[in-house]
Amino acid sequence: MAKKTTKAVKTSAQASVDVTKILVGPRFTEKAARLTEGRAYTFDVMPRATKLEIKKAITAVYGVVPTKVAISVTKPKNVFVRGRFGKQSGSKKAVVYLKKGDSIDFA
Image 1: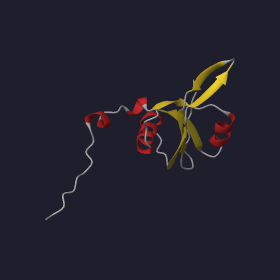
Image 2: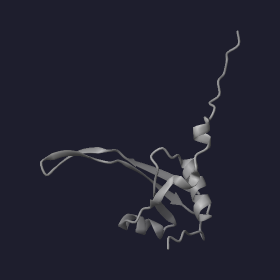
Image 3: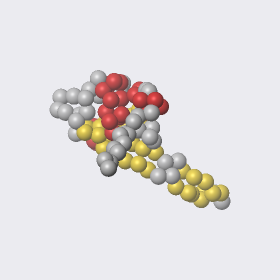
Protein backbone atom coordinates (compact mmCIF):
# COMPACT_ATOMS: atom_id res chain seq x y z
CA MET A 1 0.00 0.00 0.00
CA ALA A 2 1.48 3.34 -1.04
CA LYS A 3 1.59 6.28 1.33
CA LYS A 4 -0.27 9.40 0.35
CA THR A 5 1.68 12.59 0.62
CA THR A 6 -0.06 15.88 1.09
CA LYS A 7 1.38 19.19 0.07
CA ALA A 8 0.60 22.42 1.82
CA VAL A 9 -1.49 24.55 -0.50
CA LYS A 10 -1.62 28.31 -0.07
CA THR A 11 -5.07 29.66 0.37
CA SER A 12 -6.23 32.63 -1.63
CA ALA A 13 -6.05 34.78 1.52
CA GLN A 14 -2.34 34.05 1.95
CA ALA A 15 -1.51 34.49 -1.73
CA SER A 16 -3.24 37.86 -2.08
CA VAL A 17 -1.44 39.67 0.76
CA ASP A 18 -0.48 43.22 -0.22
CA VAL A 19 3.25 43.48 0.54
CA THR A 20 3.09 47.23 1.09
CA LYS A 21 0.71 46.72 4.06
CA ILE A 22 3.19 44.45 5.87
CA LEU A 23 5.44 47.30 7.00
CA VAL A 24 3.77 49.41 9.69
CA GLY A 25 6.61 51.92 9.62
CA PRO A 26 10.23 52.52 10.55
CA ARG A 27 11.16 52.32 14.24
CA PHE A 28 12.92 55.47 15.48
CA THR A 29 14.72 54.68 18.74
CA GLU A 30 18.27 55.23 19.98
CA LYS A 31 19.16 51.59 19.42
CA ALA A 32 17.69 51.65 15.91
CA ALA A 33 19.75 54.77 15.12
CA ARG A 34 22.94 53.01 16.23
CA LEU A 35 22.09 49.98 14.09
CA THR A 36 21.60 52.21 11.04
CA GLU A 37 25.32 53.01 11.06
CA GLY A 38 25.99 49.30 10.49
CA ARG A 39 23.55 49.02 7.52
CA ALA A 40 20.74 47.53 9.67
CA TYR A 41 17.31 49.18 9.65
CA THR A 42 14.50 48.49 12.12
CA PHE A 43 10.81 48.39 11.16
CA ASP A 44 7.55 47.71 12.98
CA VAL A 45 5.72 45.01 11.03
CA MET A 46 2.32 43.30 11.07
CA PRO A 47 2.08 40.50 13.66
CA ARG A 48 1.45 37.76 11.06
CA ALA A 49 4.30 38.81 8.71
CA THR A 50 7.02 36.31 7.80
CA LYS A 51 10.65 36.98 6.93
CA LEU A 52 10.04 36.33 3.24
CA GLU A 53 7.07 38.72 3.14
CA ILE A 54 9.10 41.41 4.93
CA LYS A 55 11.94 40.96 2.43
CA LYS A 56 9.51 41.36 -0.48
CA ALA A 57 7.94 44.44 1.12
CA ILE A 58 11.32 46.16 1.64
CA THR A 59 12.22 45.47 -1.98
CA ALA A 60 8.89 46.79 -3.24
CA VAL A 61 8.75 49.93 -1.08
CA TYR A 62 12.41 51.01 -0.84
CA GLY A 63 13.96 49.35 -3.92
CA VAL A 64 16.79 47.57 -2.07
CA VAL A 65 17.27 43.83 -1.56
CA PRO A 66 17.95 42.82 2.07
CA THR A 67 20.65 40.23 2.77
CA LYS A 68 19.17 39.19 6.12
CA VAL A 69 15.98 39.74 8.14
CA ALA A 70 15.79 39.18 11.91
CA ILE A 71 12.43 39.21 13.72
CA SER A 72 11.68 40.00 17.36
CA VAL A 73 8.26 39.54 18.97
CA THR A 74 7.14 41.36 22.12
CA LYS A 75 4.22 39.61 23.80
CA PRO A 76 1.32 41.50 25.41
CA LYS A 77 1.69 42.12 29.14
CA ASN A 78 -0.80 42.60 31.96
CA VAL A 79 -0.10 45.80 33.90
CA PHE A 80 -1.44 47.57 36.99
CA VAL A 81 -1.32 51.35 36.67
CA ARG A 82 -3.04 53.96 38.86
CA GLY A 83 -5.21 51.40 40.60
CA ARG A 84 -6.51 49.80 37.40
CA PHE A 85 -5.67 46.66 35.54
CA GLY A 86 -4.80 46.98 31.89
CA LYS A 87 -2.90 45.38 29.07
CA GLN A 88 0.09 46.59 27.06
CA SER A 89 -0.21 45.59 23.44
CA GLY A 90 2.41 43.34 21.93
CA SER A 91 4.35 44.10 18.80
CA LYS A 92 6.62 42.61 16.17
CA LYS A 93 9.72 44.28 14.80
CA ALA A 94 12.10 43.33 12.03
CA VAL A 95 15.76 44.26 11.69
CA VAL A 96 16.67 44.35 8.00
CA TYR A 97 20.34 44.08 7.01
CA LEU A 98 21.52 45.51 3.68
CA LYS A 99 24.65 44.87 1.66
CA LYS A 100 27.50 47.37 1.60
CA GLY A 101 26.64 50.45 -0.45
CA ASP A 102 22.85 50.14 -0.05
CA SER A 103 20.90 52.47 2.22
CA ILE A 104 17.34 53.52 2.99
CA ASP A 105 16.37 57.20 3.20
CA PHE A 106 13.35 57.90 5.42
CA ALA A 107 13.11 61.63 4.67
